[in-house]
Image (cartoon, rainbow, N blue to C red; front, side, top):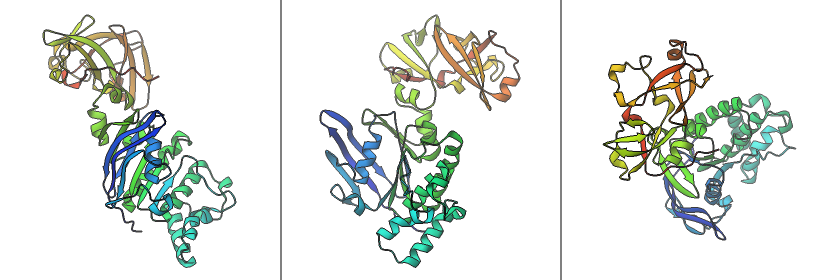
Length: 365
């Protein structure tokens, strides 16, 4: 199946609800065939922006441009965009085949062509054997696949998905995540996907748009977002980070009794410095890194407070200068240690593993 996808542009889009600014000056260019995720906490404006793109909400200012044409005043039915909601919104009195065919019938497509398209969609979403079943006879994951098939059947120019997997359990979410990514790659369709699930966004997207308080805070590939978070908010929201607040002293960062060597200090000119480091970036001296390869000032001795086995990773909680922190170790490396709770270990904080910020976002609860 071929789907014609053109460039979608958001040009300084804002949305106000009275004095509340839900979306502020959103600017984004989505290339044909690109998979973009809007990621952010609840209330950040991501669903409002998606509704503006679909035409269910009107922007207060700014333009939605598709294929070089401003479509702000084009009604949703004329935009030829598909949408999949969190709630499956299936017709309970229609079979799987009839649900998928609904949009095609509304477009007055010839019956023979409808039959062929529905058959292709059933095969695409893996529901051929369930064609005559009703929604009440399906699992949540199957119902969401019907919703996907119905949205794709009309060959939309852009497919928009509003937290489509959030109502499903973890294992089904993982399976459907693979289905969605495979469909997007096979069809070459432009997709915009709204989620508050960071793992989902990193797994699916070509680019991730981080939103907070109605604004875009960072746009980049999943790799860029995770490896180079531009703010302490992003370092906390995407993945997990340990945070420290210290002051400059003789070219180092004074954190409690420690004087840490930190790279990229020039990024923040203020005397107070906020540091973030990912748990997997912390090394275990003489287990994952030889002591000879370490900067001595960045070696610390800590006590293992809690040890959590997470499968491929073992997470150890420790206290450093009054702050609770975690280190993640590959299970194979952990097996070499035989460490128990309340035993000590020497950890190393590589100078170039720190992210340096001038502000500190209060950790999410």
